[in-house]
Length: 152
Image (tube, rainbow, N blue to C red; front, side, top):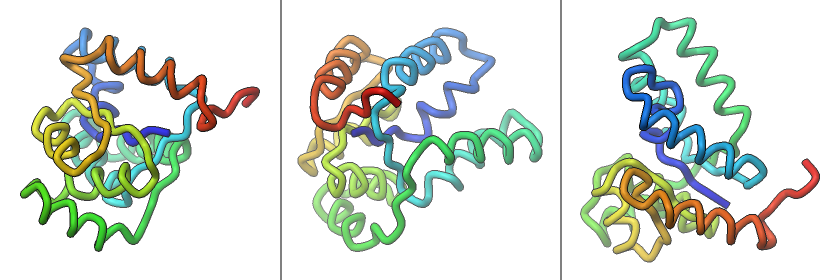
């Protein structure tokens, strides 16, 4: 199981940095049959990021496509509050950390500070831009475990 920060999803549609886009494409290809969870604020955060580069209708379409591929979790307020207390992290980061902690998922992000705070909270997390090899090794391990949806 994975929680993938909006920064990584944004790079999947990033036409301005081909290296980051390629890395995101590789991640989603490797993680294709793994269950992905996202906190409820993910939809809003992703829309805001994409709206910087695309028109409203394109953003609506992309966000709809993405949210159909993931399980969105509501009601993470108390867990996010505890993550913020423990780490001093930003509010949005606290929701991703809480989502990963609650589901037992690995958090993958392109935000180094978020990854460091997730680790402080006891969440296994990776900074994709600098830990690509470790990320793909971890995904391979997840595919071999009980969270893998084989045959789908």
